[in-house]
Image 1 (cartoon, rainbow, N blue to C red):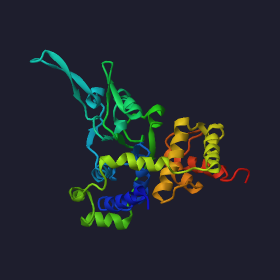
Image 2 (cartoon, rainbow, N blue to C red; image 1 turned 180 degrees about the vertical axis):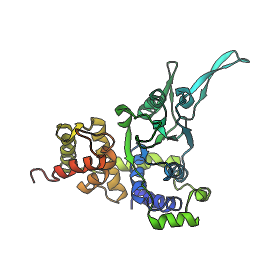
Image 3 (cartoon, rainbow, N blue to C red; image 1 turned 180 degrees about the horizontal axis):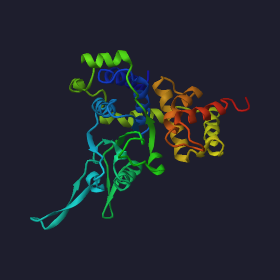
Image 4 (cartoon, one colour; image 1 turned 45 degrees about the vertical axis):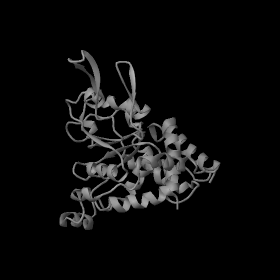
Length: 308
């Protein structure tokens, strides 16, 4: 068994002590992190988005900071700012919470577009620019952002440029009845966070991510991915198709999914498993349509074998 697959099993087992019944969502988040990607958790308040982010930070041995995004948040509240030292009679840079390995951007879409944009450079280039100087962020660096549905009051829609920087979008949904009963009994839940211990160290991340790169993808599977991407761009189903960044993300996600399934090669099932999470938030329908139905339409309209 690959190290990534073994870690995946441990991650699901340990995280289920806090949030049970979400193994597939945890697996997709693990896929994203293995690919050095950022995660967008979109759901109603109170379903465990913040708790899950804290759980993952603990189990994956990552330093962690949380920023509560609000309407009055400034970019300097995230990035940091130049502070004047009277004794030294000079300015020094006070680092903001973005200088961490896992940043939880809580309720990202409650902040103004100006505050949201503070994360764009950090997410894409793993650095921030202050007064013309580039300052590198810790390695590894991940953003897990949560957002409430846009139908709720006090939210600002995330621009397409920012949505495209999220590797996957995950929805947790309500827990099953049996899981919620365990939550009410106190058998699982946030109070057990202090019992968790890291299952990997920061030094292991490069080795795990290297395993993903070594997974092979046949020309037949690559052609299937390209047909899916082309289908999103032909204007019949989607008004806004997948970008080249998204097609690369889809191929990498399929590799990571194959790896944690303990295979060193990609099959079409891997592509189909990750496609909704990778593509759903990047696509825009020609007509008003649920994103889940939209990605399913794309999958159903493209044959796995060309010409079939």
